[in-house]
Image (tube, rainbow, N blue to C red; front, top):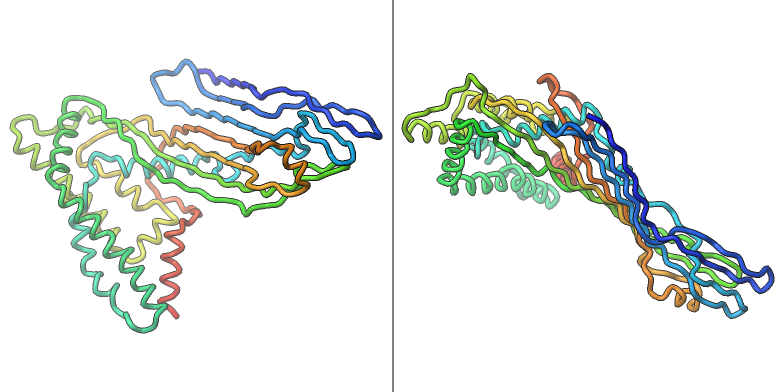
Length: 377
């Protein structure tokens, strides 16, 4: 296995000139439009998953073709302000060893062949909390709104989701039977799971794009960033695991037990889910993921856990201000900077012990905390 590093620069090279009636003509040789690509991967190890990184940087700087009222002339000259692109890793850093372990546990928990389609024991256990979530309506407007949000978040929404899954119980059982047949036949299950999309933006900033004797241009810059992640893993039956071989009935019975969570391991998961404040603990540790990932009712092993991510930063000028004749010299050109990263990290779970972490709380999680705080008012 050999690490291979490749770079490719296809940005356009151009000449620009600026004429000053007093100082004469000056020229500028620069790269304006095009893209640059940097790739790091491994060769010579096709039988296993490997880390991978691809960075693509696209730059589109406008050029000036105009004449000022006092005789200054710009000919194919790139604007003076040409910053580099934002690296998406400014917001979405490369994974550390602990990050790889935490993502491995989450990927395993969400793809585990032994995981239930819907956990009926947990569903039934949570019904007892429903009256407590809706009490207190009418105290005041703020508490009523907070109660309403918590009731929707913790009672109504999960119940609707579980009921929808239960409505499709026939298909869920059939899918589980097909999965068990594949494992029984020695085939490998290749699983893929979405790990979420996050995005953000920077407040608009007004910066000087070009400033020379005779004229000037300013631009309102807008920047945003986004990241989409997913995970993959391969599952295979352990050599000493035995699945029902004869008849359809035993396999169907096992499929129903797995689909609805009627297993001894799911009893442990239910106990954790019904523990007060376990949901908050899972924000800062991976206890729930570990419990779900180590469910080995079927008896499988995994390989090639991969965390994949596509991230992008985008900066553009949404409007120009300044001398009208100079803005006209841009001829409606775009000013766009983009950097994209495609990354693959091979992950492996550490020892099954919860590791504390400081998560980047989502808007939904902040809403939950705000609603809980309102309850105390």
